[in-house]
Length: 84
Image 1: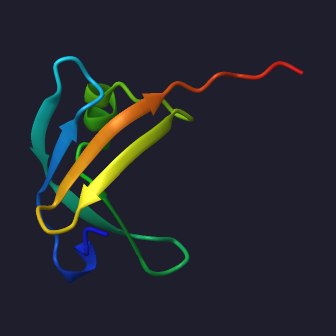
Image 2: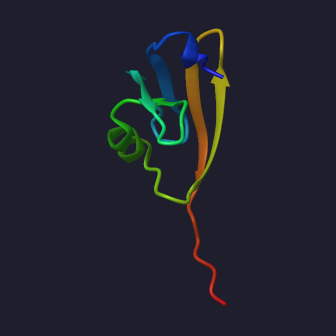
Image 3: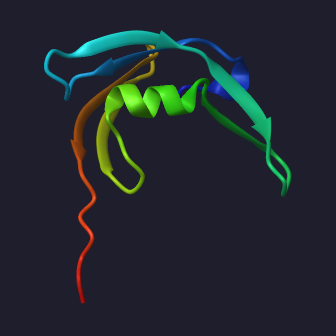
């Protein structure tokens, strides 16, 4: 949705699920995939995940404003391991 294939650009990130909410600008990067093509991602991914308090397997509810290039994280639901 960010159209990063048209040119890498900074994205504003809003962490609305935190109290108080946080906002920062993050860069983007392009990496070549092993099977061809490219993948696009935020730079400093681990720092972003830590600041947003998002863990692997958490469910993240977000929205993206294409005109303003703003990614808003609205809710993070922690992963709960289910027992058999």
